[in-house]
Image: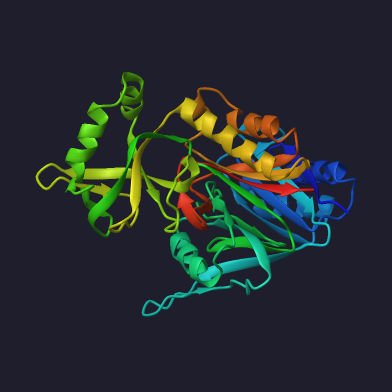
Amino acid sequence: MAVQIGVGLSTLSDPLEAGTEAGASAAQSLGNGRPDLALVFLAGRPLAAPEATLEGVREALGPTALVGCGAGGVLARGRELEQGSATAVWAASLAGGTARPFHATLTDDEASPAIVGIPELEQTQAAIMLADPYSFPTDVLLSKLAVDAPGVPVLGGLASGRTADGSAALLFGEEVHDAGAVGVLLDDVELLPCVSQGAAPLGPELTITAAEGNVIHELAGRPALTTVERIIAGLPAPERALVAGGLLLGIVVEANKTEYEQGDFLVRGIAGADPDSGALVVGALVHEGQVVRLHARNARSADEDLRRQLRLRREALAGAAPAGSIVFSCNGRGAAMFGACDHDAVAVAEELGGAPAAGFFAAGEIGPVGGRSFLHGFTATIGVLPQ
């Protein structure tokens, strides 16, 4: 028995009708069997009554486990809907694997806050998590999981759509929660993570020789800002033009590597610089001895990197066809980055042979780089399921 994926999409504005249509469409593409897992994403009017949308999905599809969230836009069936009403349903029959749903929250103990609700991860091969950016410390949990469950990839995104009263909508079984994070732990389920940060490397690799916190004081024994300025001045004209759109820094996070490819760098923004001291402030904690490289991003580099990363996952399947994929794309991508709709959805369909895919535009994406899962921005993070 092989893994099967079904996808449903509705643009109806009535919440119950939208959930019913999207759920029935996903069920039909699965042969009307009861799926082990459904992921549901709501945008626009269905968020006015998420309980009704959820009722429609459950009645039409009957999944064993269901999680989802409000979204600023959804992706499904080769389309991206960044505006208006849309309900996307991704459903999977896991061929003997299991999906253990969870709802995690942060306790309200001001003296000693703690994250509760995460099940044991002993048998887990991967996790999918959808978090509210305002009430849940996603970075903190990812750091904890890197210690407690090293090597277990976590994929997902931050909820980007809210209800009419401004609350989060985190879907969990038959319930809708307004805080925390929901997700599933996948046991005996193979999931190939794909994180496309969309940035092209520029210039040479450099070693941090002095740093504190998120401040780099020296690169290769010289003031960091001076070193970066010299590298940029020596770049070919096309690459200098790329830097004009914003300079990024790629940081190697896997300590035991000595040769690096594009996907080995955790790409973060350069938040500021001090001309007097020559220090750079970056969007990540850094330390002496780490290898870094300048990066920059535009539509072309984002397209090329996404397709390259997807082809690598397709090659990893060794000739087998993918059953489908789940997509978490930044809400800063889409038409704003590529000048037209449907880019990521079309690229996924083309590179994965038309396998069923759905997801949403997130306010931050979760996925692994260098063996550890991070919270990203401007990425397309994708989980590919083999048959």
